[in-house]
Amino acid sequence: MKFSVVSLLLFVAGTLAQFTINTPANVVECQPTLLTWTGGTGELFEHPVLRPYFSILPGASPNGVALEDLGQQNSTSVTWVCNIASGTSLGLTLRDSTGLTAQSAPFTVNPGCTCFS
Image 1 (cartoon, rainbow, N blue to C red):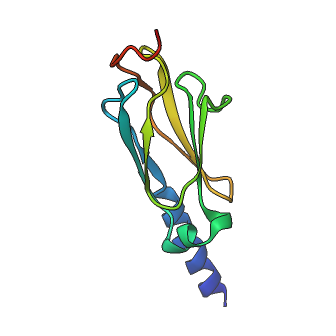
Image 2 (image 1 turned 180 degrees about the vertical axis):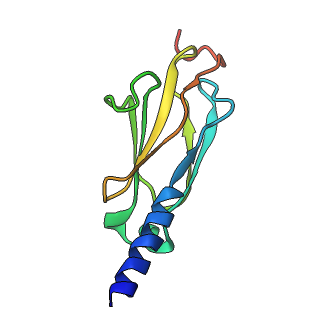
């Protein structure tokens, strides 16, 4: 029995260590950006209570208040139309039901249209 519990804990720890967000390379204001991440199991996305929450935060405050909450996700990607002005430093945070978080590296919004003038 001890071997089974230890094996399960090692498997869970290995799975959690792989929970990562891919930092987007070119976020442009007013343009759609595909945000992607890896980690979790199929069960994570099949059960509504376990689906992760995705937030956009200030780049200098990865644990701060979200600038935008993209809500609960049921896959490993979401398309977001950047509605934050160019020059703003941002970061992405994904949090699952256990409190485990994955964070991107900070990135800066690039200029696009004039939708903020």
